[in-house]
Length: 157
Image (tube, rainbow, N blue to C red; front, side, top):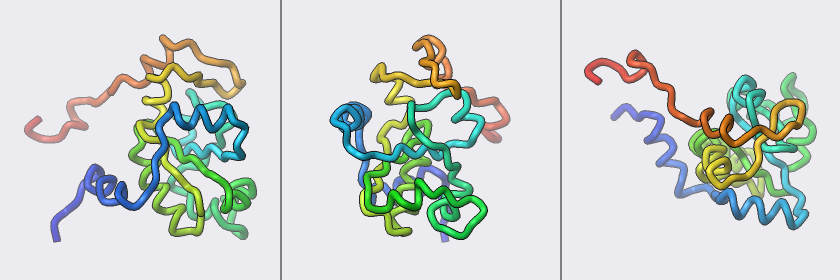
């Protein structure tokens, strides 16, 4: 069996999930539709900036957060099974994987934010900090610059 990498895993799920572009999500939010915004990034990323009114459930505990009876259960998330749930990450890749998981767990209208927070930010939609204060675009834009060290590139790169 050929070893897959992260990109391969994401490519495998994309044909099986629904995605929404940032501007379409903004339209849905402005229309007042009942939408749960689920940010699956790690807490440190969420604390730095996120979409207002989103909740943070890292991918590592997603399955147990989606059902009652677990230490990580998030009742708001469990009860959203029949509502639109937009899953959010930095680029739309982790959210794609999380969307497939949520579909398997019975979420009827789980969709991934295509292009993630990077695309949301590029579309000039606001991001907030933990106090709910809107962050300046210069700060949010700088946050999305790739920061890969030589060690992270691997041998021969």
